[in-house]
Image: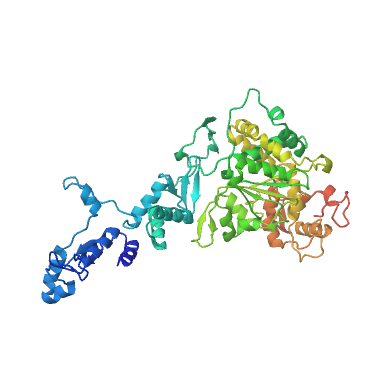
Length: 564
């Protein structure tokens, strides 16, 4: 009887459970065969079960042994219905009866078995001191630990609920535990977006608006915090004198270029402040031993090791693999093999779009991934998308200075880690106005260094480097592959085909795709692609740069001019 009642209570937590008990009546002083006083077994068993599930009991009102079917047969159905209702009562624990008075009687304290799912959810919430909230996108519960809101898996919530049952030495069922967690989620407040002007540390938050450091607050809704403690700088603190290892490494990695030095600092600030909202991603290229790995290590230290995840470009484009990068502030793509693709995944994530997430054994959902992406590779990535979606988000740094093997310090990472507080303080005060860092990154996007990398990975961008643009459509005719004779000095598309052949490059794009991609390729040089119909065909605003095109143009001399 009890096990059935418990199953009913777990499934229908607010249902009124009634025990239609047998009335095992006996005369006063009557004894059983063993000579012991008789007891009303039916009544006692029903009351015991009712106490566990907060139920009700009703017995046939007879002075003889009877069950409700006996009562129905001896009286009519209507009389049985009336007697059934009038005899209803809710038993009270004998211990409670002994300690309470009629005038100040309190309702009995329910056990976990007697509680409904919502009540158990409240018990579970209390075990986390009420510091739980729900993320609306992922339906994940988060717990505020005094520093940040950390996700708590459904499995951990269930185990905590089980622990509550075990402490009370009460039985439980998997269904009852799951229903308590589901009910808890319905009660929790919804999480708010983290405040973008706050940077979390182990001992507080730094407010970029006021340039002040203060203690943590629940209402900050921080999801991430750096592992280090923030302290005030000492008088006259500088990178050169108080973080010499970092200073020397960065000067060498940037070839002592002051502009590039400051732009790398801006990239580090972007990671520290988790400025994913700038809709940029970092790409660091260079030969082995040029400092790429140290840069990635420093970024991981600034973001916090627990907030950093390693992934691949393929993972950014696959809903199942994307589930592994949710909840991190820094996504590092280390040692990428040469990537060739449209970059749809990295474009969507860094663009702030919602992306599909398909976690194992859970309902798929879509969400934004608030993370900075850092790609580290020997060979720059090659993107087929020339609409500008990738280009305007891509910030390329080329570390060209290779440190000789005999000069490399295997302990450099640890030495820089010891200087991390100084580095963090410098970044925060150097970029008290975060837009200054963003402007430096925009400069790096347009730098000659970045353009050279793009020319090396995109033949069409490199081809545009051999063209001169004017403000009027008075240059080469567009042409197509079918025009004979082949004349790269007259037709732009023929010039492109000559470039591809002269550089031993396969798979030139069609003339239609050529027309679609040229605006994006020319935009890398800050130029516009103009076209105008003429009697000879469609004319462009582009002409060949004879001095550079001679490298691949067949039978072209420096003194030759394009034919009209």
